[in-house]
Length: 508
Figure (tube, rainbow, N blue to C red):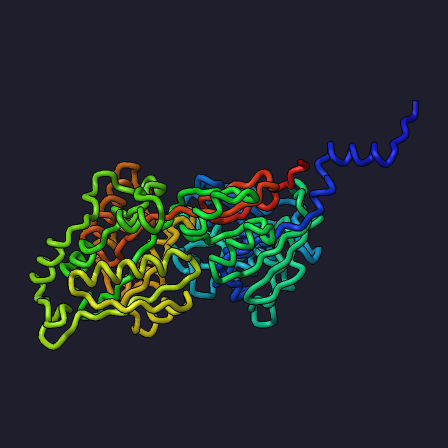
């Protein structure tokens, strides 16, 4: 018997298929982060989070490597050549094929720029026999983790100009860009050529909103369905709001102070120890982050299991010991209470930025705490680019920021850059340990036993704890305000994806 469907019947079938009238509602997100570039080398993480672009290798919530655009990969017995087989049938948003040749071209452009790929001993990148080939000058087991970094995302040929510079983002993810207004707004729509499960929500937008108070009001009023970058005051307020719920997850990220080791006030490890002793980390974490357990007792948080050292003597708060250490280093209080050594005043400038709302708050707390031991600290709140710029021109004294040690799934890759002899924009500055460099190199290039690898990681963590070229302040918890009408929302501990393709609107 032939069955006929009425309009109501078709609607019911659509509901069963997961396509509801509600699913047609656009999703609006707000956050503090500006879209300052389309170049993956400087802003790639934004486009992977928006699920516009893909990398060869993906990462799950626990940091395990997963297939991305590459369905599988292998390396030669000598560890010098890697082969990546691409996912069959993948298409870019302009309809062109995701080929091994185009993937090789995209990686070549990323390779020629400063960034994470320079940490790998790559000799050449090419293609042949339908696979992407990466040849190394020496073994490097972390190469797949490097190719999971957002700066290595694969874009279509049309995304590049004649010089190989990215002019637009044409990726292969489940969402494609329909409108991009730098630095504030991006609009995307579901990509019908996506090979995976079809996202329920068709349109997604992101708007940069600088003030945490404004983002809070937008979440409260329903103008924003997801609000990122919440400060503690906003979280407390939104916990009472009926429209939203608060999602939270601990991240492999550390809020830390970068010190210029060439500055005469900061070159002495005894002084760096004194500065550390004068920091009430637990008090700051309790008052400003609303979680005393986020106080950093070492650089690597517990979420970085293999790098976090349970036996390491924790960083302590001891004002008396701090004053004694300053005195031992030759610094004595002047008439104005500020420490002096000869004609030199212990006056410093700390640079930070409001992209993460807790940073200026923590900087102000540091200012008060160090004043108590005779340090005259000026806080300059500006743009995040001022910290790497200050590193490059040598003008930076102190920089406060949050460092994600799992931006590359293997923390070793980040550390190879951050702890390099020449330093790094978001790593050490004018500080170097030859012994640590040797240990890092062994970890990167040699097939160490689990016991030897653990000992090497412990040695690195211990040196950092003793020398303190970076002062850990707090570990990090990410929070977001989420509309109660959304289902399927999960915060990614790796901060790689907003999981937009998993979201649905409640039919209630």
